[in-house]
View 1: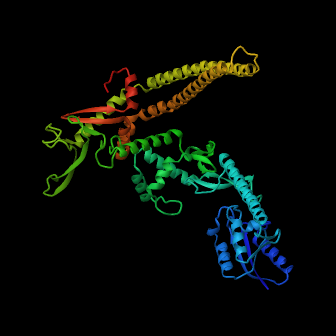
View 2: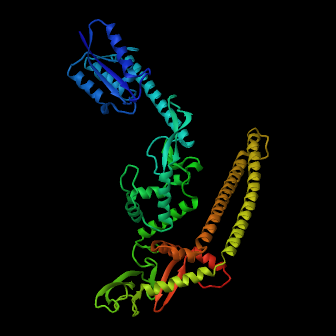
Length: 537
């Protein structure tokens, strides 16, 4: 009596009612054994969701059991539905068959009969058979990857984590693999989208850092999708994900990192301007942190100009400082503690770099002086004139560059015509009908190709510059919106927002004895330079 072990395998746990499902394989093997005299099934092994191509032999538990059983002489025949159930790797599966044969185990398929390795011809046939199976697996993998790649490029959802702010919905389009399924896509989740807008607002408008945003959300009762409190990494991912402007990122399927699906307006939650501002803030903060310098970044302290204030005499950044002072209530013997905040020059200790006597500046006094000067400067700006002049200048620059592109295009067209003629002349030269030798023509062709390449590069650069100039339109409008009614917005803001607003118009503030020097940032400088008031910056 021959002892028979059966192996059944499907590549997916979802394979049912197909030609490769486990019940069908089992029935086929049992029917095959009934046709053999003295065959008896003593063990059945099955693998669910195991790829015979992606998984190596030593990674498959069932094959390891079969190998050990063959060594221990526990069975005489290994039976499979088809040999590709044994495996699809041309570099491994023939060796498995050979190993079993060497341990006196016959290898059979219900569809293809017995597989031997006694002769070189048998071994060659084995290799060819499994080589074909390997090729089919690779082709299947390529088809699946290409289908998923195309669906991703078309904007359909291909699995993975759903970004906060969105949900998955089914479309009317039938799935490419299973006709009973529908292709899915992302849609905005209205409730979560409001939270996303809040996160961007806290970061861009109030200049809150990741940790401060996390604390704000958690304290206000906001929770992640799984009901847990927010963490810093979640906020980082949200603020850097372009999906909130309508461009969903994806990777894999042979795509480069950062590939995005086509623009989809229905996925937009924040404007391009807000997202761009968030990117700029992240870039500035990242650079500053690398340099161990937090200039331009409002800190969490009580001082209005933390991170912006510098000593006029030595140029050192001023640190926050405070002292407690007991004061008496009016006409009462009870005392209360008053906290006085100050800016302090850490280098001014009488023995280091800063020798000036003043090393402390009262925050209340100097904050008031600086804010008053900032309000006076901004109130004098002619925003309408700034916008009109800036836009007119940018339009003039764009028109000039567009004219330059047309000139280069004519030049490019002329060069390509010359190249066509030279290539045609090569054929004549080879048969002796040209005035020029092939060497002369080759040199001329090489020279023309260099000119064509140079023209192409110039056109690419000019088109890029035009796109950048067009983006600057939004910058001009942003500056105008930011500065319009600035004083009123500032007076009604809380301290965090005030610090953020000041940091967007000021680069540095130098404090001296009863004086301040304000260095406005480039955004405000551009406005001031166009202003007819002659205000000094």
